[in-house]
Image 1 (cartoon, rainbow, N blue to C red):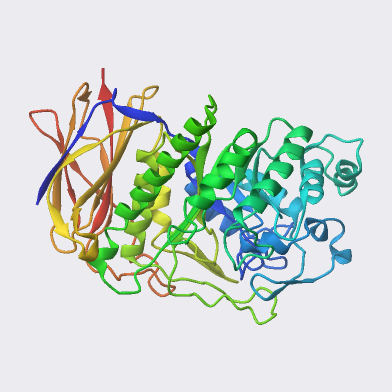
Image 2: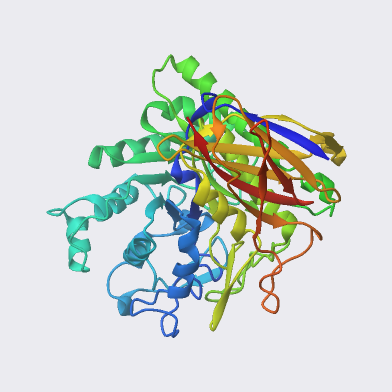
Length: 497
């Protein structure tokens, strides 16, 4: 099969915000304890942070990490997680029916974030918490001193403010499962009040209002509209969440998941423009897709009142990795609307990395994130694709090829991300750059080919890993590359003037 991708460096949707390559750490299962934090483990430092986990996370280049939840945050009192470790009380966690030891809290997260060289994205409790609690946490994190909570931070050994700039105003408050769930009108009032007070304390912060937790919610978009119309002048982002699944075990259907991701982004683009028009506002509010991943096998979230139980430890295969790649290509193509996106999560819980006391395993979904995060820089180009289609079940005709591209004018580097959804036939793709010339054939990384169910395991950790490919430069100055079936190709080349 053959396909062509047409690009022009002047045809783009704007700069790529590095925060689309971000992560999420929740107090859930073994994400924190035995994940990023494991005191006494020989792989941990004196603060208890697993150094092998940090080393594995660094190539993902996560610009921000969202914390501490997730469903967990809606019944969490952040004050339980500060002060001397020996004085911290254990608490029951309503969200996942576990016992939270509170040995890892705000100060530990900030210290861990510094080691990872990532920015914190803090979430406040607007479920069972209130505006005063949210403002107190902001004071603790960002104010320089001379007030009660800022001085408490100094007493705990951190005189310098943390300067957290991104703040989520609650989590999934549209969901009946959420502690403190309320209708949209009530949540909008809570978010407005908290956001206004928090920005009054620190005008430099940005806030994220809760949008719909899934596209299948009965109140999808209506909830978001009501929240946006009420809070427009006091928030900077609206959140969207999505978890993909293949319960029907239909790989042809599942590999067309990008069509649904695209549609969600189109929904929000339309909604944001609509509310901006209704408000007659010169301001723009953007999208924060701050939970996304594949999740459908390990669904039992009942911790049976244990501390750090094994929960939601999904094992990922090749088709899951290619769906994750489609999230990222969709995000790049809508760089005009989407500014933040967080893979949920980062360690053990629906994560690219699994740990044991003696080591860790990189799962298949680790690699597309690492490749796109490393090479997508500059502007997001608008690809025009000509190629075959295939029947994707009740999703109808789907393009075999999914593609996104970036161009960095400062370095002259372009990167093209190609996903072949076919399970049986390699795809030869020609890349045409209309207004420039490729200076050479560049380099190629390939992921995939063969069994869509192939997965990395502790016994075979390198079954699904990138390999080096190649591209050819045609007489017409097109790049020609072969994309495995199914698979991902990442092509990088220098562009001449």
